[in-house]
Length: 138
Image: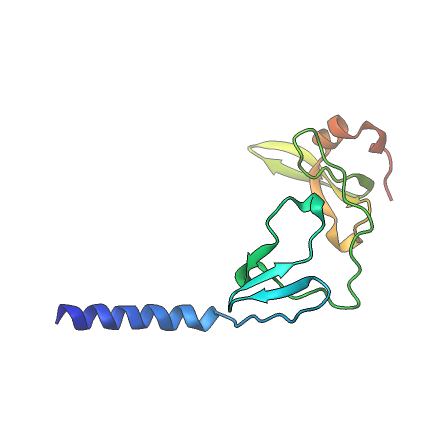
């Protein structure tokens, strides 16, 4: 009885896991040097990546479509190695109430990004980080 319940539970968990699982298979080509076993691939990586060239298939994704153009340069990094995007201009302003205080938010278009990728940021944080940007309103 206990064994049957365990088997039912295991089968149910496997069914749910299999619903979201996708079979991935890559061919030897641009980045794949060779297939090692059923789930491991050796990649042609630049030495600057500093990672082992043999990776599990779950760590891989299909290449970008032909119409997707990658960024020509990497975004700037701060002193801690985090991405530090550079704002291009302020598109809009709005007032927002945060903890019973009225604050000004601005819609920022980031350098190298499309207008759809613009984000709302607090004005005072932008003034502190990017004093050259204040006044550049579309």
